[in-house]
Image (cartoon, rainbow over all chains, first blue to last red; front, side):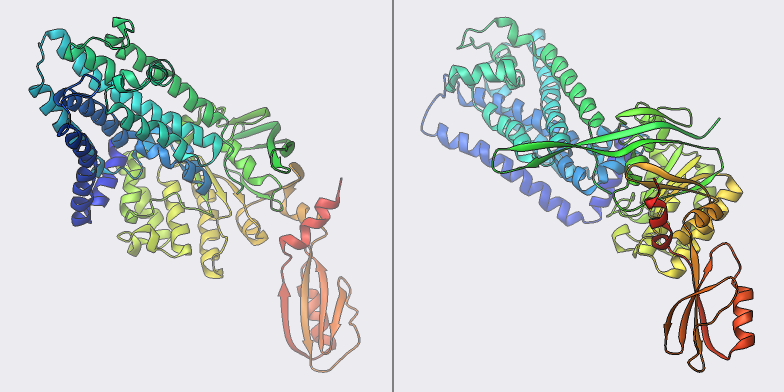
Length: 261
Length: 316
């Protein structure tokens, strides 16, 4: 069903072919710029927080890929405040498809695939250039990180959307966690104070998107000496976070007040 | 088994108001304050009341958008808010103020998308599409994006969209608002035939009493969240002391006319306004006028909802 609705939007988008190409490529260029900043930094230093450029490329790529997939599929949830105000959420609630699927698929923008491609390329380069002792378990942890990271960011988008059902418009608050979280996790957590690391481990589990799985895949010791089990715990954390997001979303819809008319 | 069964339904909204920088007060508003009614399959019911009376809140609870605060509510034997998506297949909803179509997609694509969302079998879809598109005369518009449609065209398109999946119940919230007379008339005829031919249950909210007179046999009036009236149209007129007004221009100025069954309410030069109770025919009154005086011009004004409702609202 997601495919049917999203497909209609993709077809509608392709009627403006030039616009699609321009938007997708500018999107890719813009997302590449923040990796360019990292590249520029490394022209002056050899390591950041004990991590080399290729290792940071892996961290950056994992986080960017995860938010890219989540943004492609669920980024529209950030428009939920507007949908509450203009009443289009009401329309979605009287159709026989779960509201979240409609929220996600409506106005589906394929150009967002740009970030996924760009991050995927950086990740591929980082993983191939960094010295990694590949074992089956490391491949598995990497693959699960791609899936679980996307789920964690997707849950954040859903939580942000649910929050807007209560609070009217608060897309900036939601953005602080999603896009802000992405920027934060592009760098090794080793450069942050321990409080930040605790927050993204125990409160908003962003560290499980890329940091812990990357430590395992890259074979780097945890600079904060947190339990090694964390490094393979992303699936558990993602499952819990998805459950929290799903429950919050349901609660938000049951408390939805609609608009006046 | 009733199609819609409502018993002592209530919905409270908690309003937070700012009083100063940090002080806030909370106030409870009873948008729907204990209403009870049931609608049988195939009925066409008009649901009217002033702005803020609770009409939309009721419709939103019936469709599952809003969760009731308390009371019993079953639509097609389902609890709407708990089984919203299941119920959605069996109902059609048209909100007059906004469209259920996709603003940037051509109309045909919007319909096609709805076919997939509702999983309408292709033969059913094609039969309904060609029938309704023909009846509502929107065949020439199928290639246009919805944003380019006029209000009347969009409303007709929205109604087609709500009917593609053969809903058992059609909810219409202010379907004729902002339409011209011809469009309104076409819509009313269509709805009446839909109700008669297909047996689709219709629940219609409106400010235009003519909508209800032409489409519905039954009227419910809501005021301050309570049902003020539930009955047929004649009873509504009787309860609301509705009158039709005959406006007559005589050739010469004459004193107020005394015709049995009518009452002069206003005189202005050669023009006089006579009221006739809505249930009685105006023919005899006009015949009596014409036989005793020379008439230059004559018109009849139908009772409007604004004339009828105040009498109902004043009742306890």
